[in-house]
Image (cartoon, rainbow, N blue to C red; front, side, top):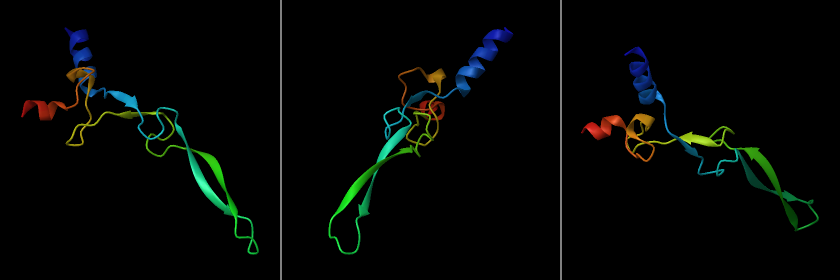
Length: 89
C-alpha cells in the first residue's frame, strides 16, 4: 500500500509542463535593438540579439495553469485544464 500511496501523492504534486508560449520551447528569444550610426546620420540599423526567455527562465517549459492561477497536476490527467480545487466546486 505504501507504493500506491506514494505514487498518488507524487501525481498530485507534479505539475503538467508545456512548451513556453513566448519562446516556443527554445528557451531563447530574439530581441530587436535599434542602433543609431551617429549624430550626423539620420539612418540606423536594427540589431537582433538572442536573450534568455524571461517567462520560462531559459528552460523552454512552463507549468500549465488553471484559470484561478493554480497549477494543473498530472493527477487530473494530461489533457486537463483545471486544477483539483476548481474540479471539486
